[in-house]
Structures are given as C-alpha cells and as structure tokens.
Image (tube, rainbow over all chains, first blue to last red; front, top):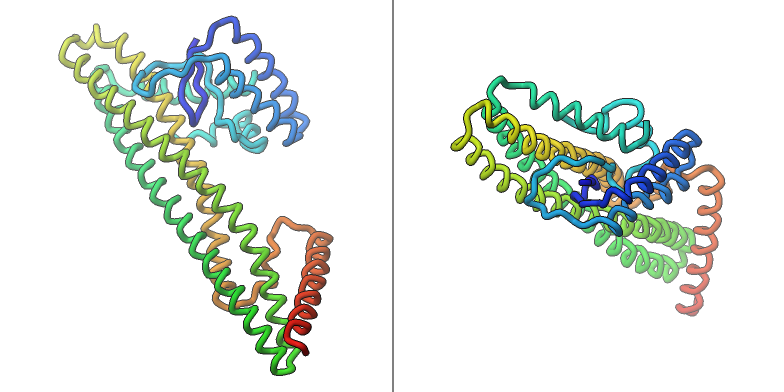
Length: 92
Length: 233
C-alpha cells in the first residue's frame, strides 16, 4: 500500500503494517479530544517514524495516488483540530 | 473517523473536483499541468520570501551584537565620567539585547528549517511535473478520449494529491514567515531606538516578566560592579 507522509514523499508499506498505523491513528483521535499538545506531538511522531522505518521510499518522479495520507510530521494539535473541523488547512 | 481518514477525505474531494471539471480527459491533463506549473512558481516565491526573512533576522542579530559592544563602551564611558545612572541604563539595554539575540538565534534556526523543507519540496515537485508532462504527452498522442480516461484518473489523482501536499507546505511556510516578519518589524524599531524594554515577548506571563526583570537587574548590578572594579573606580 502507498502511504504519503505529507511534506516528505510517498512510501510503499506492506499491508501487515497498516494495523499499527490505524492503532496510532485511533490513539491520536483520543488525544486530540483531550487537548494535550505534548501527548499529541509524541504520538503523532510515532506515525511518521513507523512509516519511515517499515516502508520503502518511492522515487520522486513516480506519480501514483496514495491509500493512506498522513499530515506533515510537525503538525500542531491546533492544526489537527482544524483537519477534523473543516478543510481550511488544505488550500485549493 | 481518524486523522488519516479525515485528511484523505478532504484531499480526495479536491481531486474529484479537478477530475470532474472537463468532459474530455485530455483537457483535464492540460489543466492539471497548468496548475502544477503555477504551483511551482508559488513554491519558488515561497523559497525567496523565506530566504529574505532569514537574511533580515541575521542582519538584526548582527546589529544587536554591534549594539551590545557599543552599549558596553558607553557604560565604561559613563563610569569614567562618574555617571553611574547612565552606565546602568546602558547595561540594562545591553542585557535586553543579549536576551533578544538568544531568541533571534532560535528563530533563525526555525526559518532555516522552513527554507530547507521548501527547497526539498521544490525539487520533488519539479521531478513530478517533468514526469507528468511526459505521461501527458504519451496519453494525448496514443489514446482516444475514452481510452485515456483510466490513465488520466490515475496520474491526475496522483499529481493532485501531490499538489495538495505542496500547497499546504507553502501555506504553512508563508504563515510562519509572516509571523516572523511582524516580529522583525517590531524589532527593527527597537534596534534603531535602542529601547528594548518591551522585548520580553508576548507569550510571557507577569511572573515571567517580573523574574526576568529581577534577573536582568542582578545581571546589570553585577556588571556595573565589575566594570567599576576593573576601572578602579
């Protein structure tokens, strides 16, 4: 499966790793609701670290849509909230 | 819905908008290509803006360093002249300038980070655009409109996703640069006038300010004593 780390590029990630990605994503939803910035940063970092560690980088000249799109690794809690609320964070 | 699904949904909606814009998929290819070239220009402008902001901050840092030297000399002059009050003011300003240099150094590192990211983004997008251009020409030359549809959907989806990604990166870099510009303007005035009292920053609370005042006062008194001792006064 192709995974995009926004701001970095795309990775090919084996399907067996997707469960872990979803697990971290679920934790993130809970953390966004509690509003703890520090917890958010450390949990969110796990997500891109995991993909970088287990995935294989796809060359920059390959053009393919991704199955999973992960926001930039320095995303703030405030920005994460905006993603849940609307599409203001992604310009046309 | 998780953060990932939510992000994908928003970006997918944008992709669908582009895919649904034209009847003939070959027109979609041309339109998308135009947008990519526009976006690349935007990234280049972003790089230039960030670079300018960085230079400005670096220049301010140099000026503040010069100020510190000058204020130190002024303090010595003042002591020589028996004007301890003036020496104290100079040393207070020196201390404030030193604090400001600390925060400028952090900002310069932050903006350098933005600059590096945008330069990498520019490189990645250029590679994608080049690749898209050749795909586009192949599709247009070899396929009828109906046959082109499937191929267009994949490459336009892929490149549109990239464009959303790059668009967000440029937007975020710009926002950061804007914030720094505003701060740099405020600092310009203070560097010129030499009044640095208010530069303890907006995010500090009253206790922080009070503490930094006490610290600065201790620092100033200590320097004053040292200077006096050094000069045998």
